[in-house]
Image (cartoon, helix red, strand yellow):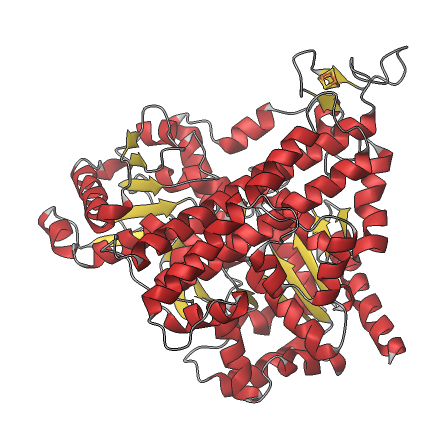
Length: 636
Ligand code: NFS
Ligand code: SF4
């Protein structure tokens, strides 16, 4: 067992190296933060106005409320929904950038981008009600992009968000309408929520939570349009075989990591690199090697088969190899400490977004109008850096694992089609109804060093697989499985129960792929989680169930970011039982905690539960699936 809080062997080697050179990593910093302040940890610290911070001190006369009189439930509810606001802002702003790029592409203003996936364009256009008959792709793309952009500025509260309305089942929509959480505009809902939680405004915890859920639904709306429009611009993922872990960094190559979330730049870097191998060779390397970290990594993995270097908690360790020439970052989940790590080596950290700069790092303002040239210039920076690489400082863990990824919903349905050409989604419905598999679990979310890096991700996946649960994965969770060698057909043989093995055998026999299907279907980045929800919606329709009756659960064993909170919240609103592996800062108010873990189920069918122990969490997830199956049988 590693002396560090990680199960990853490559990470352990690099943590040893960090220790040797005296670099304090996020693992050291996580330790230094312990013990945490109980007020903050349980959510009963309020800093919403300058009279704060106010803490709830129940035993002190006058201390059981904040200076303004806010009770624990108000403080906890406000803090929680402000996380959701941060997450929804990040996801939807990402979506807005993609939408603007598609619009400008369709208008012929951006020469380096084009409509790549016309089938997806048609599918999306039809879903959201854009006319396609006899129109050319750019005209349709322009309307689709405009419809996406209209989601942001709409202020007529009688109208509803287009993506939500077009994809969610009628029953679910009606629950949202009845509970007044159905949003009309993304910006409006975000502004309203910040207003609602201002000092001296709403103190009703339930009303505040409903405001938060409305914004969480904006989160999935922004996510969903980001996915749809990224697919249109860059293509929809198809199965790819590649590798994962730090061994994907190559000593003889110019290594460039793309890190962050937005594919607008990383896609260009991948494209540009293909034509620049000779420049790398002229500098003495054998070529250019691209690797991915976090969700930008997932985006280019899905569409281009780029290898995964590592996930969130271990991003600094990619620099520790001494062979990372440039790390090109865009937005979100990028540790500011990368810059200090880079100082130990020759690595260039290149920030590219006007809202994401790191003092002391190299800022290259990415310009979509000259995207290809920008990408080339960034690659040249890396090639220059390579020339300054000190070979004596290079040590790359010799660890990689085979990865089979690229499972957009379209790619999955194409495989199911080989088994059931008329009704592909029936393939899963049959397997559930016959008891071959217990249901589906989505393994999602971040790393959180309150626990051990990747331990619960992998442990829960293994336990669920053993119990015949079909696994979907995304985000840093998917990367955890990939790093650990679980995202391939061999892992099915090693971990799956008999039922799940049979299910896979049937798919493998028909799939026509050159490799066996992996233990979990990697559906993309966190912004792509709508792919999972659309699958559940289809399954509900096929099985004649409400969304909240489908044997489907969600697990974020190491949730960390505000985005993860927003994602969890819309999953609950969609009817999905949602496990979070860290104790949420809602426990400081019994009332709020009960609302999100119990009462939510009566209203939406979905609810949260907090469970840091992998064995207990797995057992509960399996119980939930069994209970839903049992109820569905009884209903017939
Ligand atoms: Ni999701 Fe992906 Fe990772 Fe968490 Fe961050 S990269 S968007 S937020 S840490 S899974
Ligand atoms: Fe304190 Fe109220 Fe201000 Fe919060 S809003 S910091 S509880 S006075």
